[in-house]
Image (cartoon, rainbow, N blue to C red; front, side, top):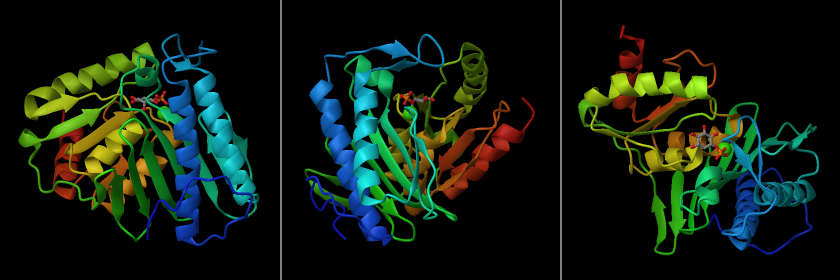
Length: 276
Ligand code: IPD
Ligand code: CA
């Protein structure tokens, strides 16, 4: 189906048909993305969260409010969690997992490469995932069992991870947490990995990193310490593009993930398990 049926406001409720949930996710992501672009370059209400380098501003909060309002109007019985504090229980069995602005530091510095991430999950996991890059007007989306696509001004493209890619030819994206101790451990692992691979990229947004894996723009992505809203939509998009998305904790963090095509995924898992 066309994942982009329009962006106008609606007060109608929508059914739990995956295509309707996808259309709602797209509409909400587009509204949040427009709000981010309206505020881009003139940050207000800048504060910090977990550490002095973990920023949040009125833009993140306004975008999350829009996501919450739009989705709740259409799906009042669904649960929702969001990076900026939305935490609502529901009765339908569906949970929306949203990051209104993933790549906050890029946004703050007026670098491109930030996104709005919207996922809807059921008891089996990811059902629908949408990641919108509002600067490049790229919309990544997936429905469980339906494949993954990118819609941009040049048209719609089906996504496929690169596979097979040997470890010593792999271009890998990663990210680093906001906590100094965590970053030190992540740096040690990257230092051990770097001589064994083609190269590392640090783009600054986990959701778009995952979409880059899905599109074959990088061969894999790993990061420890990311949150559910960072990877809920992008993880489904990777899997629907033929990739594997599993827990990965080379330095022992409980929230670590690895996304890659099957052959590279196996090589990365073996590398992480081997003594260093
Ligand atoms: C962060 C970004 C970053 C990743 C961090 C995340 P935020 O999310 O996804 O790339 O390395 O772990 O916390 O703070 O920009 O929403
Ligand atoms: Ca995030």
